Image (cartoon, rainbow, N blue to C red; front, top):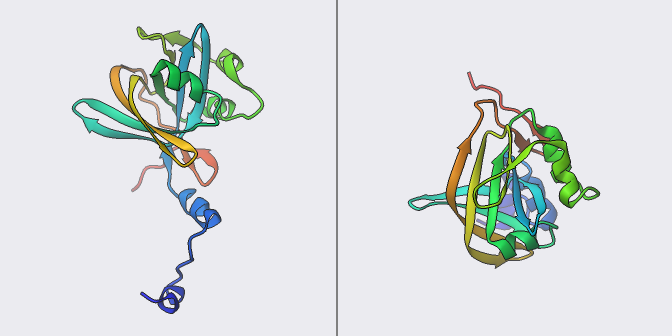
Length: 174
């Protein structure tokens, strides 16, 4: 396809801004990844989580290496993936805040400890206790390959979704 043909069907040359705008149109489930080391808990909100394999149960999570929680996740090789419900917008915002960090993020909800020591959010749709089995650096992010060791299924409420820089719930398709 020539540049002239692409222009006639509405294609835009890719740039970081166009890529970012395009990816904002990809709806994603919202999770809090959390870890703990020496009694200190760290976590962050993210949508870049995806199932990978069923046997062994494995998911991938893409984490910015500049994130405050990354170093704890990398060093402990353990994370919890807490799938948020539509009633947990405030937590999603709190764990994505650039001004509130570390233990303070965990004070506004009830958290318990799973057998591995990772924090688990009470009232999440599900909590997956994961061991990081591999890590691959891509740009400023690391793709964490996480084998799921245990799960807690807690709620049947609607999931929290992130779309075009907004948190929202699901609407049934009729």
